Amino acid sequence: MKACFMGLGYIGLPTAIIAAINGVEVTGVDVNPSVVEKTNAGELHIVEPGLAEMLRQAIGSGALHATLTPETSDAYFIVVPTPFKGNHQPDISFVEAATRAVIPFLKEGDLYVIESTSPVGTTELMASLIFRTRPELEGKIYIAYCPERVLPGNVIYELVHNDRVIGGIDEASTRKAIEFYAQFVKGELHATNARTAEMCKLTENSSRDVQIAFANELSLICDKAGINVWDLIRLANKHPRVNILQPGCGVGGHCIAVDPYFITSAFPEESRLIADARTINNYKADWCAEKVINAMLTFEIEHGRKPVVAMMGVAFKPDIDDLRESPAKAIISKVMQRSNNAHILVVEPNVKEHHVFKLTPYETAYKDADIVVFLTAHTPFKSLTWDDNKVILDFCGIFKR
Ligand code: SAJ
Image (tube, rainbow, N blue to C red; front, side, top):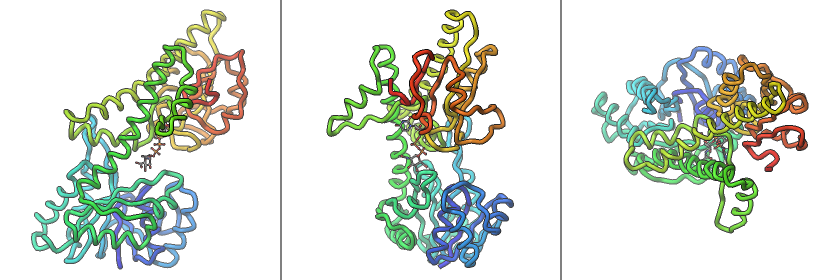
């Protein structure tokens, strides 16, 4: 069977590779010539443990090759970005462009699947685009939506072992898509319709955003109430049916912080809690920045000099090197703007160098700083010992004090 993957990014490339080493003949298509070139040379353009060896195997065996344009296949997968325009309105122009590129190749019996996180109704929209352009295909091809839920850094394992939700525009399409994924997915394949599958992905991540907002709101309340929020959550979670997540310095990444807007932009009247959770999580980063700035002013009044401040962690979540959409990064920038040349040390153990921040090793920064601000709960930070001579702002539960 031949499959054509449109988009060789964080999801498209690993999925194309895994399909290729499971007996599918795969054409990987990307608009970026260097991605095509690197992939054909067996070089990864993304960081993902264990994937390089699989790519070389897939290219070496000829099961996978990359191109700039689609090739005739039996199945076509749309795995391109779905960014947002300025006003939190989703942009499906890449999905539409990739669909238009494959339409001329479609033939009776083919399968067309969207994997990109998309607003509800996108699959039906693309189906009508296909049938408007190729009316003879109506009812003759299979169209479905199948979201992914892999965790960066564990993509290979999760692509194979996570359950998948597969929603067709009709039952025959759902069955056809399940047949394809059954070739390499060991997790359970759950049949549904396209709209439900689209909403399922958005629901998973929005539910997590709301849960994190609850934890962040608790941290604001406890700060005012003089309660240790880490103890409070630990004790509340002793209840057999309570599972409160951890407060942080805000919510980062290009999934949890983004996917809820696919719902709130489409259902503004109905999605109040989801919208408020986004506001709370965004506000938490501002709240943390203000706390740091106040601590710096207090230090200067008490000590008659500007403090040395260590900002511990820039990545958007613990133990990764991904700084994209990181609340920690936004907080550091805001503190720097308002620090009127206090000495700010920036620490990020998972990154060697940064084009904006000069990085300091975490032990040095901790030793030299008057004020230590923990923004991202990287494991190495947990080996540091509490020092009563320092002002420690722990926004992510390193010391849980
Ligand atoms: N965070 C907290 N407190 C917590 C958990 C997370 O503040 O208790 C913060 C993290 O620091 C980070 C953000 O939330 O800034 C998101 O973290 P995450 O652990 O949700 O990680 P992601 O965004 O890499 O992965 C999520 C996962 N979705 C769910 O867990 C429901 C992953 O399975 C999805 O595939 C991924 O989004 C995605 O691609 O959609």
